[in-house]
Amino acid sequence: MGRGKSKRKALQKKKRLAKMKQGKLVPFDLQNSPIKYTGIKNRYCYKTNIHKLIYKEGQFFNVKYQASNITMCNFKNARFENVDFVGCNLKASNFSDAVLKNVIFTNCNLKCVTFEGCHFENVYFITTNTRFCEAMPSSGYTILTRYPQINIEGIDQLQEALGGFNLIDDVYKYHVLHVTHKRVNLWNISILLDMYGNNIGRALLAFSKRDKLRHLYTLGSYMNFIACYLKK
Image (cartoon, rainbow, N blue to C red; front, side, top):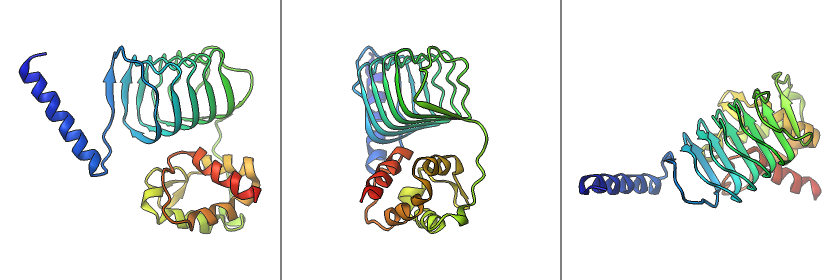
């Protein structure tokens, strides 16, 4: 690598680190690396651009990928728990023998994606075409194509809870329960209702009143709280 290129890369890295310290989103961009990566946790990944990376046996926990390109990546034997892929291109990535729990694929490109030998538990494909996937498991997932019709006002305490989350910027900006300030994400609300029934209203209301809400990037992060709260 020439001296000029080395300086440019060092300057780019310095700028990225400075933005990260300021709390700004810095897209991860990397292709064709021979390094084996271990995965990530508690991260919101916006416009990630990765190609032919190796995450074999990697661990992904509470991660949301939004508007990202994740193509021809190796996720063999990896574990994904509480992971959302929203508007992502996963073309030709390999998930063979991976474990997927509480994983959401929304408006994703899954052409030539391999799920051979995967274990699915509570996986959802929302307006995502699975016809061109390879070796889909026989169970453990739900395909949603029709937008749900839900009367939020008719569910005890749910509207109040959603209004509370709407006012917390560190929660709202990840758009798990809201699409805009005036429109809730009925896809995700319907999944919570199917899992926990109308009790989600009082559970989410209690959650919205907690101090220092952090890392609410995925639907799975809300599932964890609701499940624990309703066990009390």
